[in-house]
Length: 202
Image 1 (tube, rainbow, N blue to C red):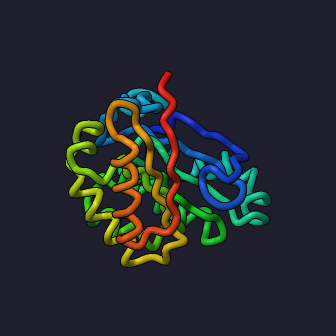
Image 2 (image 1 turned 90 degrees about the vertical axis):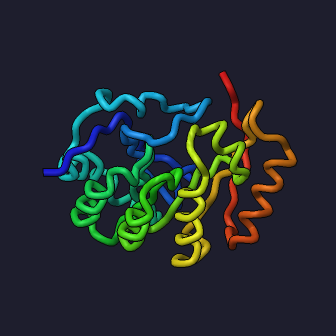
């Protein structure tokens, strides 16, 4: 039986995590170590509650009428939700095709995972950090190449409306010019939905 550590469930979210009314489900586990990570709890695999797909479905199905009426559903975040691909696939089998399933992802996962999950998901919210390799490495601790390869493949195999890319202004890491370069490159790749925002460091 597939299980996963989940450290957060946030119901009745609007406009922030996809279309309609959504519930944000946050998994433990992340390959990145972003300097200003807001969910460092996800780094510790001992944190959170163990769920099976069945247990999660039973807990969130209370909002099914909202999901169906607004074309909403579940947004999986974290951490890195695509590390829990088997869990999400089993959850899809339970909820059926009517619910929207979206992932908030860094795309820093194996290429075959992205290919395997594409038909399971309805959308992607990609947190790309920065498209300049040196900045990406300094901020995340990882190379950009894998995330970039995965993003290119997703854009080639999905309608543009299914993919939103978030581009943060990161204090001490990227400049206004850097962000502009990232946005320009994303546009050249075919990204139409870009959420440019400022990190607020506390």
